Length: 106
Image (cartoon, rainbow, N blue to C red; front, side, top):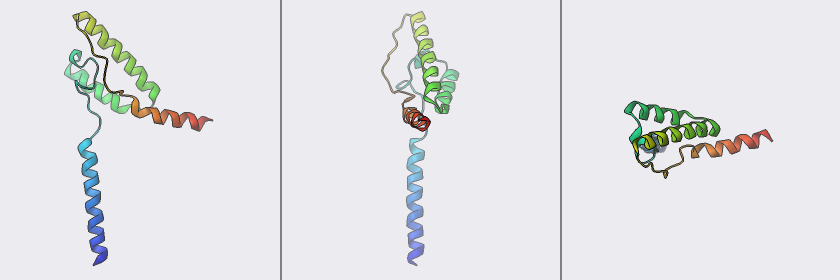
């Protein structure tokens, strides 16, 4: 009986943790966290989000980020509009991995 109760409690905890992780979900591009959002087409926004989610190295992420920022700055300049430069570092989650990779090469 105690074993069955313990299994049920553990299963419930597992479901709660899984639901919480799923509720947060993967990173989503939005006007609040994407430089130049207003200058992107809906298709570009989807592609941007997909690309950012797929990076595995800091270097490839930074290269994409530089290109994206330049493209958005060019579009803003063409329209005579300002572009905000604040926001979240989309490559920040890869910094730890890059440090771990370098330590492994020593």
